[in-house]
Length: 85
Image 1 (cartoon, rainbow, N blue to C red):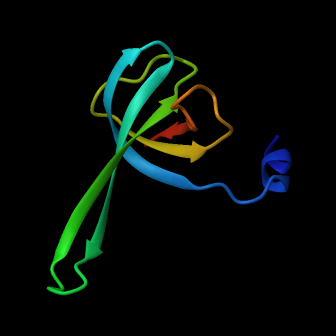
Image 2: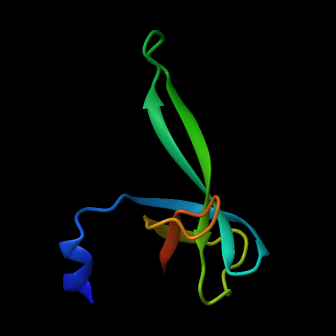
C-alpha cells in the first residue's frame, strides 16, 4: 500500500493536538505554526483547526497526532489521522 501512496504524489502532513472528539469518526485537530512578524520581527503563533477522519473512533482530547491531506470525505473533512504521536 505504501507504493500506492507514493505514486499519488506528495501529500501535506501536519502535526497537531486533538481539541474535540464529539463527532462520529471525526476529530478536530488544532495545528499551530510559528512565524516571524514581517515588521516587528517578533515570533508569533498562528493556529488553525482541521477536521480529520479517525476510523477507529478511539482518539481522546489532548492527544498529539499526525494528519495527512486526503480526498474530500465530507463537506468540511479533507484530512485523515495517520498516527498518534
